[in-house]
Length: 404
Ligand code: DI6
Ligand code: FE
Image 1 (tube, rainbow, N blue to C red):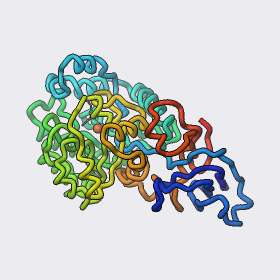
Image 2 (spheres, rainbow, N blue to C red):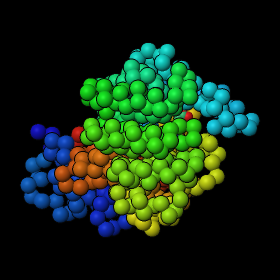
Image 3 (cartoon, rainbow, N blue to C red):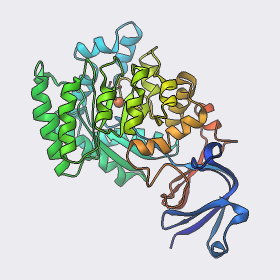
Image 4 (tube, rainbow, N blue to C red):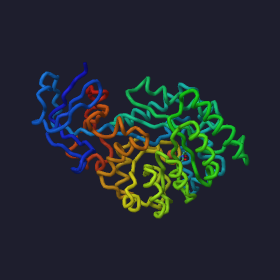
């Protein structure tokens, strides 16, 4: 059942030694949603002769893209703050004045579940049009146990409405709600940690994150959250070094984090910590762009130390109002000087690693899930080079081709 040969395509496997793992005139064979053979069409084994063969007309086929860092469940929007920032207010000033994340918290708490879901689905649809098949979604705009859990429940419901895999991340340590003003330690204990235990009991948590920053939580507070996560056997990740260098990435590495994210202010000499722990560096050029940041993440040092780099949208109403992963890839190249191949690896193979999903996703290889993106593009560089447009011809979801 559900066996297919996809032929007449250029396979961008993102595996093996060739650039992009490229195979010209390729065939990909799938059985029950898993890749069972991939190679040159002329080498197709005899046992494939009876399998329905679908010609892709010279299309480019990549692993489906993965957006490994989003905050796409939220209420309201922050277009007014966008205007304020353009007339001189900084992101931090707005946050300290009660705007920023806290204003989205107000709008999220008052939104119904269905309203939150409807807003999220619009952004999910944007990502699907970019060939995305897996999306990580964080909580962090509820900041009570109930509202944080509600965000993750809404995020999980996305899977019932769209053909996409959702991973949910507990990010209660995102901002301090007004009711806990000057009591950050209490908030960490009562909500970030107690809530985590409850959300985990309900099966809502795939990973645990925090905003380690002057306007967020201290490394000491994040350590307490990470210790609680480790006791529950949950993997961690961290918003680290986005606005200043608090050594969050070093802390993340100490806990064997799946990823450390943002990293504009990472000291180059700290890159080796991420390499040693196998922690993925998730680069978020949308936030760099929208905040008009000028400090670049130390890409050269990350590369030198062999730290795997991912690229994600950070889709959120404040620092990164962006729902195109391909645009994030283009920005990663132009702003951060990634190569187009690094950018695609960052949205496939390394994004899968940032979510602990590399056994199933991120490359076109034997045994992986047959989740692929089929593009009208002359070559893989094009995916990062061309900004915007409608390049996706279709998606292969669980082994079945779906035209856009
Ligand atoms: N860093 C970010 O860029 C987002 N969260 C975080 O910790 C911003 C979230 C927001 O501004 O609403
Ligand atoms: Fe973020």
